[in-house]
Image 1: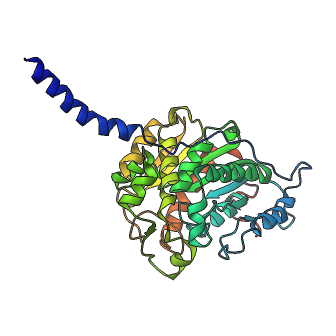
Image 2: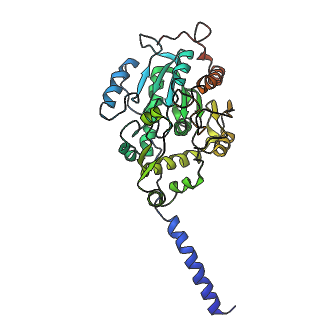
Length: 344
């Protein structure tokens, strides 16, 4: 091969390689998961002080949709601490109404206090979602678990979609020792559309503007979904969500020891069922179970329970959830036998 030909081939190789090098050298949204334990005003052991504290914190956002606020549902009128507490982490763009009344029924059956969080930017005017970061959502999840630990001796964490992603992150923190069980409903380990993974890589924000534009929107199924979900919002909010999903998916799931129940549909058109199955196989939890829902009233087969999208799914999911928690946590069966006597 002549020197001229070698030089030409090297030049062609450089022309091919340079764009690839430029791409991989681009800015990446990297999630900082070094979240410190949150402050809670419960030094005296009185969990009831959390209620006015949360109300004051939420009052800073006058645009919160009524019914989306961070909320405690007490098992007893005297607001006592219970053997178990249930914490609900809602999904991306949703609120605590997402699968309601599933967690109310779960907590009542367990005689447990219940905490519903509200992830940053959610349940507010659409622009607020574009201001939230992945780190904000991690802090919200850490706060939710801390509140759960204040409300109960041990905690059952329930997460839907990206709430399930956050639950998997919590299960790897030191505080996970106080988690009796986690229940992941349609956990987001990656959207069904694999092209979305590009947003978690180099030039994520630039690709978002090029591929999606400034606003992302979808069509709500009914008026209540339109009220309690953010169905149009700044598309830039997709980048931290995808970065969070990638960060958790790439984390050492094999080290998780929290008993884990995964419930999902193979027909899910929002998140990838294959990603869920792969993550489940990696889970190191000595007690784990997967339940597949073959059909759902939710047209996306994603939100598998709740009065808004899948009413009949509530009872169908509650049964395996109760069975799993009672098997994983000895204190899950309250005095009286059937666990259905909690006072609201």
